[in-house]
Structure formats: C-alpha cells, structure tokens
Image 1 (cartoon, rainbow, N blue to C red):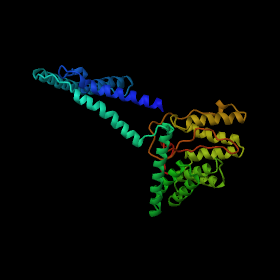
Image 2 (cartoon, rainbow, N blue to C red):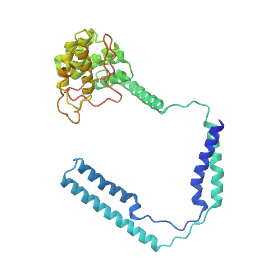
Image 3 (cartoon, rainbow, N blue to C red):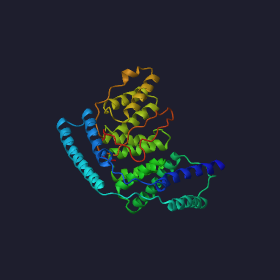
Image 4 (cartoon, rainbow, N blue to C red):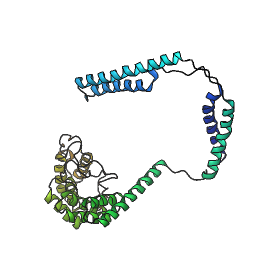
Length: 342
C-alpha cells in the first residue's frame, strides 16, 4: 500500500511540474513556428514521401506519381505561403511579455492533488487484483456477442421466414460455442433455402463441431446434399475427406484433400493447413508427402463477397478429432471457391 501512495505522489508531482512551469516563468513572447515545424507542411511532406514509396512498390505508374506530386507540391507551396504571412504579421505585432501567475500556480498545486485524492477515496480501491487487458477485451467482445445474440433471437421470433436473420443467429451461436443451437438454426435456414450448398455445408459443420469433431450420419447427409448442389464447396469437401479419414480410409482422404488443394488459390487461408494435413496423413499411410501434395492455383487476390469460412488451422485427430471452429467473430474473409451465399 505504501508503494502505491509513493508512486501516486510522484506521478502527481510530475504532472504538476509540467503544468505549472509555464506559469512560473516569464515568456519572451509568443513563438511563431517556422514553415518546417507546422503540422500542415509536415503532412504534405509525408505525402510526398509516401508517393515515392508507392512508386518503389509498383503501386503507382509514373504518370500517376507525377500527377500526385504536382498536386501535393501545390498544396505544400500554399501552406508555406500561409506560414510566411503569419510570421510577417506576428513580427509586425509586438506581443507584451506574459507575467507569471504565481497565485494561479499555487491554487493549482493545492487543488489538483486534493481533487484527485477525493475522487480516488470515493471510487478507488488499491487492494483489488489486477485484470489483464486481454481478459477485459475478451469479456467486452463476449458481452457484445451476447447482445447481438439476443437481438437476433428476437428477430427470428418475430420473423421466422427471415433467412438472413437465421444465418446470422446460427453464426453467432457458433461463435459463442453453442454448436447444438447453431446446428438447429442452420437447419431452419436450410428449410427456407434447401438448394443452397453453403447452408448445407454450414449445417454439417455445426453438427461436426457439436459432436466434438466426429462426422456423424446426420452431418454426412448434409455434406452429401451440399456436394450434390455444389461439388466445389470447400468446407463440404474438407469434411467429406475428414469423414473418410475417420472411417480408416487414409488414401481416400488424401485423394479428396489433394484435389481440394490443387483447386484452391495459393492465397486461400486454408492452404497452409491443408498442406500440413496432407503431409501428416500421407506419413501415417506410409506414402511420400511430397507426392500427394500438389501446388495450388495462382493467388486469387481479394476474396469475392460471400460468408463461407476458411478451413481450420489445427489437424483433427482420429478417432475423435478436435476440429476447431471454421469461423470467427466477426466472420473472417470468405472462401473464394464458393459461389452461393450461405
């Protein structure tokens, strides 16, 4: 406790010293910053430097860079002219020296510590244990998600035919670990849009997660429907391979995952995971990992608009693999290989 009060006193003294020094000394007059020190001029100089960096990175063509330099230079010259005019006015207008206000300094020296002490004695408690910032952030995110969950539950209760509300509710429930409820919400969404492959895959995913990573009969049915509607649906293809692996057919899983990797863009978020998955499964099957790990497609660039989620990062284990959630809160960038909207 004594250490706390000593630290508080030192911090208060430091703050007061910084506040009171200008009041305790005479000023020779207001200083007028030069053009080099004004924020406006500094911003324009930073913009010129940023243009050069963009040119070096190949983000701007020579014509674009020249046009940008011309515009920023024009603004820089105008800002410099305004600064020079302000300096001329300041030089022509004599400023009387400021008188030190010792009375104000003394009042602040007494008032600031007393006010701080009063607030702390009313609200503070130095005996409370510390709470890590990460924990506070997690609690805030969880509270926000709970609020969204309540709003969505009320929405689907009032509008049971609102497909987007059911999809949002299922996603939120999954983020909160309510996988059984998420599977039921995805089932409601499937009833409203039975021909949507992404919805079928999302329901299958929730069923797998609710079963601790095991691809059960109901999940297999949903996967079969998803692949029948869209054979390229990446989550359905991944979990289909997982089901085959759990059945003991390592080569069948390798065949499915190799095909998925070969048809995935190189910048897809699941590519590193899928490579590791193939390598481990091939090793377990006594095969050469390099021989069953194809090269992905060229990078696809920014992902297209969709809500399909990337594949998980950790490897599921057999016979009861722990398959991590394929989505996060908020939803991550979509899977570019899918075309339907879940």
